[in-house]
Image (cartoon, rainbow, N blue to C red; front, side, top):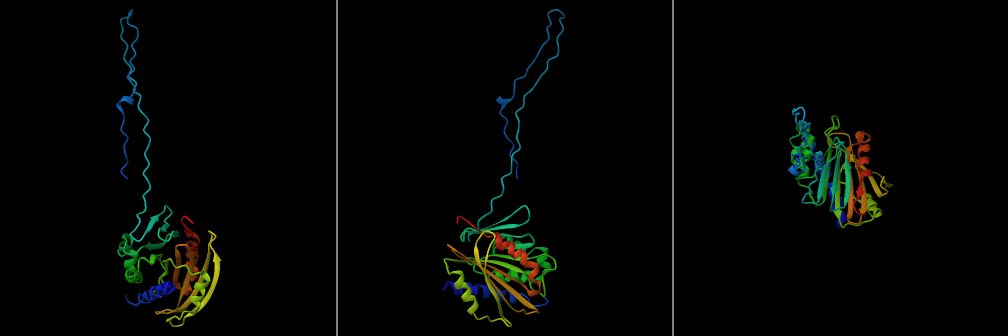
Length: 274
């Protein structure tokens, strides 16, 4: 069943995170000037009948006005999976899932990537990745994800935002044609058995986004491998195309720092051609 697949997605993602915390480790176009557009030379001569004095010739050339050209905005390339990323002027990143029919905005300070796309491979060579093994480990783990299902991954790369080896991570998941109601998803989340030590189902509630969409918000937690508690927040969107889920994983003691960013992503979600 599709809901089992979505359930397993969260499990696979989280197991991967648990495995990541082993300690120690434009050419501008020049317009062509039409020669016919250049004004003719105007030559004026003073009378020479009496004085026999020739006045100087004055040449006036009328040039066409050349308007500056505008460099067209780059078009985001759509991947084979039907997604695209576009970096905006403010540093935020617009993610479009053409298959799911949604857009979300990832705030600056987060490393947003689609697995096996250029930005994903580039991420391995970033200074922040080289300096922080948990980020490198996360990149390695998500390479095995099902790209038809796991659509986007974003890692908080701001200094000091890794707590006890645990990164803060936002994922966008899409289950095509899964049209469970939000109430059905709530029941499934409450009834599932978690394999994690110290697991707690913290809360569930229905909210409305800034765009007027009704969503289900689930909060859970469990013991983290290197100490402390992992906080897990899932938001379910029921769309005509299927179910979209936004996941946030972070350290429980750090959640108040990153939740505003997650809420920004949540409230940015827009349905294309509703």
